[in-house]
Length: 202
Image (tube, rainbow, N blue to C red; front, side):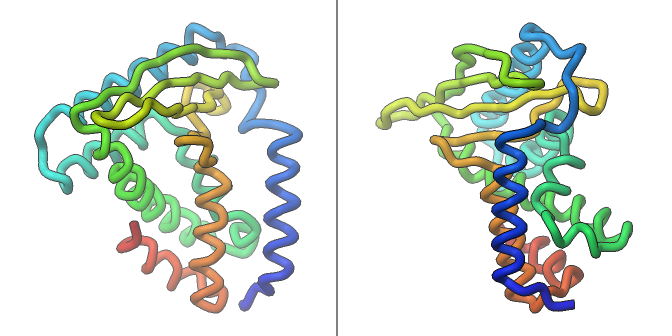
């Protein structure tokens, strides 16, 4: 099934506006500022350990994938990234996409975090936003001005997980939805072919 790009652009834009105005992954009734901060402190500590480990780049990507799987709401992020195409994907395709997407994210953002070698991330503050928490950290890199890395945290799954991340203002959810949509378009709407491409993409 070929998806019209104009229709995709409209639907993706509409969904993005709805996401920005309405809800996060779920009502975070039990989520607290302390819980959100604890999650990001643990996440940052693990990222910093990998950065300082001296491991090879490939080994670091494996570590980042495990960190992503442990601390992020992978089901929400992958479903959001697939966007409108998720409506026509089979259960098996959604599962295959989620697995491939997790490895892809680890490679892509692992490359960004690898730039932090010799540097560090520090948690600066946390604030409630609607039904989730926004936790702001600062990245300190050698020879560069500090910049902000922000995590959005909810407990939609019953435990605290981050469901979005901003690096220097770049929104992970919206960026990946655009990227995945473009990959599907290049494959003429073929979801299986896109998943194959995703397995080697970075």
